[in-house]
Amino acid sequence: MDDIDAWVWWLVGAVGLGIPLVVTAMPELGMLAVGAVAGAGTAGLGGNLVLQVVVFAVVSVALIAVVRPVAARHRTQRPQLATGIEALKGRQAVVLERVDGTGGRIKLAGEVWSARSLDTGRAYEEGEQVDVVEIEGATAIVM
Image (cartoon, rainbow, N blue to C red; front, side):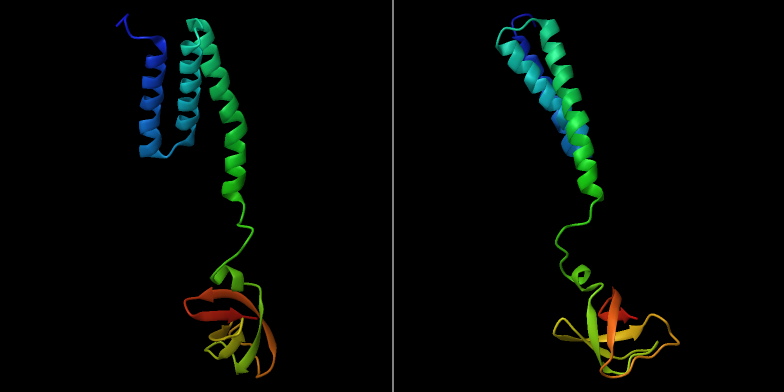
């Protein structure tokens, strides 16, 4: 084992961390794998074992400290551009046929949709403007 260079062991460690990353989808393992690649680079450039471990630790901790909060922020944010059904929520529509708690028709985004009132006791007459609150299947829930 003494005839294998240290940088090879670091790369083996990086691959060893990369496999569970793919299986578990834990990004922290990827950040540790990048740290191991940095340790391999340090070993390849002739750094001693202490320097290799320090580089591994610094790169890994820096990636976890910087990338993880950014990724968490992006995971919780809604997309900037709403598409499909999400783009229709909150839009206004015009009542084509009386809409009440049991049904009706509206014109929404240039298309005719079936609709029903959010408040089952409320009815909207032809020509009224309504707001789309939710989409359930092919039915717009309006108020």
